[in-house]
Length: 151
Image (cartoon, rainbow, N blue to C red; front, side, top):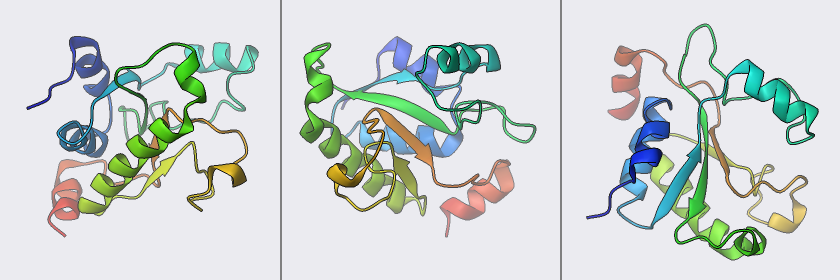
């Protein structure tokens, strides 16, 4: 059985419960590392200043109703930096696992390698293969989350 390393587990601990469930199920199918989840507004502002993000709006940020990240960044494992960033096939395989696992839990996931959800990375502007997010603000309290998971 596959497990997350300590850093991945720490990051996942600050992610939305649905993302944690999807990641914990997906790691049984393919190896990956969690490299980012929850951000502070200060972090987001710094990323904006560096041109790494396009706005201060992000599903990585907490909201009034959800203190957990509704997005995370994943790397296929093992990963060779920086050359593997160009290997879209590896990211596509990981995305297929994450998206399919989300479907298993009635949860739509948007992948940064396919913002338009066309399954054609060539049609995606601003390719961000590491990024996965909940398609909407799913069930942020325990009761509605349980109802969602149980169909």
